[in-house]
Length: 300
Ligand SMILES: [Zn+2]
Image 1 (spheres, helix red, strand yellow):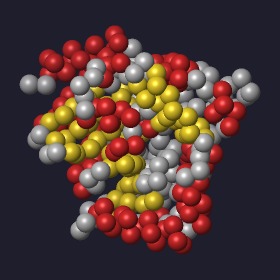
Image 2 (cartoon, protein in one colour):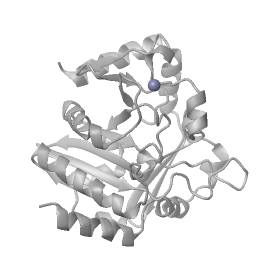
Image 3 (cartoon, helix red, strand yellow):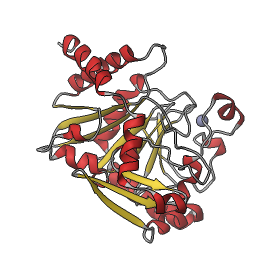
């Protein structure tokens, strides 16, 4: 099975037969874009109204229980084709794209979003998708369907943080507190991930999964995992009011690309505002050091 080729065929058919996807992917080519360079880091903002649903998704338990799950096949449009991976996941075109290739990889079963039980699947799918980076938005930090296990995948080179990570002769800590694992052996990368995850539990008092965004890709025979621990879901400035911003950061925003769904927000944003939002929704240096200390004393 050549998954990347099959995905290209999925796109050819999907964009022909599915009007919603065709229009939303076509709109990417004439979207307004702003490029910023902020303290040496690249930030891209795009005016992308098709992401409105995602930016305004209500993800509290009551709202989730009352809506039909859009990742369950029984509620998906007939035009939304799938490639089945390992009998357990559906690979599909995301009809509300940020990039010209944007996939959703969802469990065939309706089961809650969780990373630890599925990190192995994430890594295996990343290995089967060269050129793509897979990402996971935790149930409390960006997933629009926290009740249905899924990953997303986009072209690796589209995310500024990934591009810089792979050429990492710069100090990546200028971004914000996150953890970057690079290992040759899969079992070791997974173990390092699990130790980091346990360390994150030291800064949260409840037993739920620590809030996080995770990226994974495989390149040049090495496994790469970036873990972004979160302190909160949405910033204090989030809202629909004229003085507020409809900005709900998840993995893509934290890696340098901001799809913005309201034109007034797109016109008003500044790189320093985006940076301050990143600092607000990620953990402090002190919390990062707690995780790091746990990691150093437990990884061997
Ligand atoms: Zn579902």
